[in-house]
Amino acid sequence: MAEIVVFASGTGSNFEAIVHGLSGTPHMVACLITDNPNAPAVDRAKRLGVPHRIIPYGKPRIEAETRIRAALEPYRPTLIVLAGFMRLLSPGFVDSFPDRILNIHPSLLPRHPGLNAIRGSYESSDEDAGITIHIVDHGVDTGPILFQKSFKKSECHDFEEFEDRIHTLEHTWFPVVINDYLAKIEEPVHRR
Ligand code: GRF
Figure 1: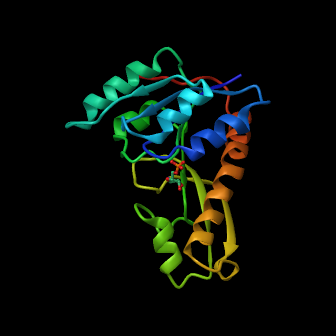
Figure 2: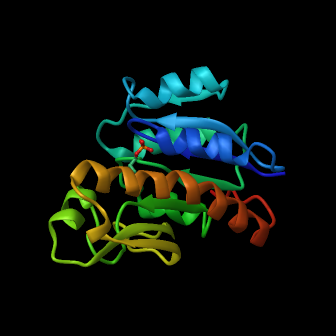
């Protein structure tokens, strides 16, 4: 059985999809961590009965990360999952959890990294669009890709339909990819 900690800054729809998607597996979401006290993800955590910790960011970010490390200590998670976490983790933090941090991004990386990827993908001349789930490295949306799922943009009539299609793919596949990844890795890692 693996304990997972999800980091999210906003709506938290992927967080909720992961909680539901992992029920019925040996794994569980042990905690939600957010940098945003007003994140709807916090309401979802309360409703789902998942413990949450609010850790606001100031400068330097390393201070927030120190508090995050302390918050993780009781869980010693096998995997950290970034699901709409709007902060860039420091290289030191990432190196503490080698190959144990996953991120989801709403485009077919390496196309459209960073912010506003859904809009960027929609307005581009690309014929296809989709989602990427990858291991986090020191860059922004640059880590090794675990999974991608695409569709033809021409299948969507407008931006709302396009956005819905992206989010449906995310909610469907993120729990599956997490479960598959957990099957491939073994020991909890929590280096300092
Ligand atoms: C998702 O589109 C995800 O790909 C991106 O941020 C969004 C988070 O949405 N990284 P939500 O908070 O899970 O609803």
